[in-house]
Image 1: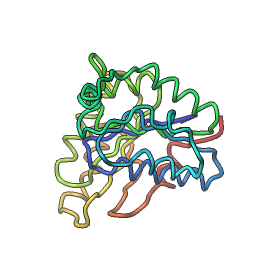
Image 2 (image 1 turned 45 degrees about the vertical axis):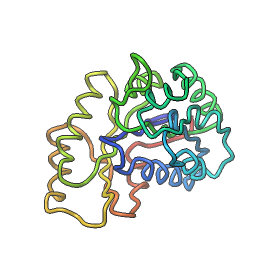
Image 3 (image 1 turned 90 degrees about the vertical axis):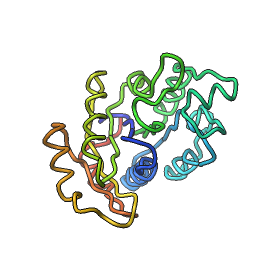
Image 4 (image 1 turned 120 degrees about the horizontal axis):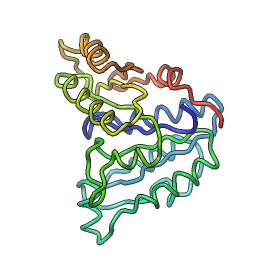
Length: 216
């Protein structure tokens, strides 16, 4: 990876923002100048603010959070409710401006790759336009093998580079399937498992070692 990574997920609520913030903080600890971008933020959460705080910098919010909507729905639906159509080139311009003043930019999508962003536009199209490799965040628990392999297949069908998968346990208890899930995903998906985030745990340095963020 040189310049940036696009952090997506198999679903909403699997720990994507937690992982993105951890990666940003770890990159800062390595002396990198870090920027973040949450192109489309919906609902009453504050993921964008958490991402910005993780950089330790005062980023321009119009670049780091180009689209914010109150409705907790897909970006396309939330934008329509606000009377707005999301413009892919505005997102690309925001990313370019952030990248010009950073060693690495962590871009966090909304939901998964096939979340609608605008008419004829999916989150996968945003990742493609930014030409960034994907880090796929997946839950560690039951069902993750199917969800993760579907996400990998969708990414590759669109010729998106997949850097690897991060398994994140968003709940305190683990299931009996967890020890075998990573191996199954790696084997059937022909993909690297970049790290395992336990509940409240942080495996960011291991992930960074494998995606190798470096100064431009």
